[in-house]
Length: 334
Image (cartoon, rainbow, N blue to C red; front, side, top):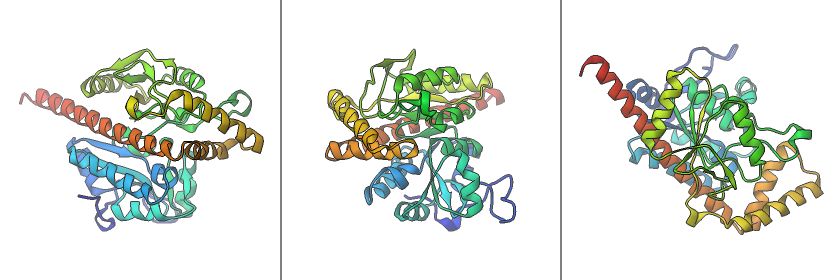
């Protein structure tokens, strides 16, 4: 079973974009019904197939993630911007179109009003996806890696908007840590400053996306989707505004050898510095360098990371839905 067709998508929105008649946010009927019924839903970002993976692998991975969730009884909510409309629950046709379109905008939260007003297509980053998921009532979001603090940020101020957005957006994000090209120690410090809890899934060793252990410890771990759901419910009962980050390491048998990755990253950073590549251009350059240096093996790790996070996201969303159902039954005396 694939996503809803564009013709069956419904507009569920609080306000339109002035002067266009377009909805501020479009939520598919399937996602809206699932949220209203308390069924498990998992948000998926679009930049993984608009900017992160080569064709035709990008489309295959996007559709596989949706199918993986459906087979687990979970509704997928792939999020992106289609023709200027931020959409929660892209149809299969829309995903296919975005995956095949050149020159799409990479849309962070700051970019949403611009691409909406200009009627552009765009793939949403972690920040924009988390914001739109929360607006649609979707509590769980699976991604690959998070943005964070870049090396040299004390001078460049190069930090991802993912962090500040997640500090004010109460979703749950499942990732395999932050991207290995980042300053992981500084990123964890920023998460602490922003009051964002970082919890390992069955580990207190913070993963480094391509590797299971980045060399940094975190304070807490949960051992099951049900434990994660209890943490999320506790956050909500306390009415706290920040995300909960679940760090889910890649299978050790499928990681890149850590020492090999260290050498690759050193060469990639040196080449970026030699070419004067900084700012927004640095991340795609470094990731492309890693892919070429590993002969494409990093791409396979990337896909494995995503599959694992989608699977865990579905399990946590299911546990949350079960807790909500139990609470409702208890309150009615059922």
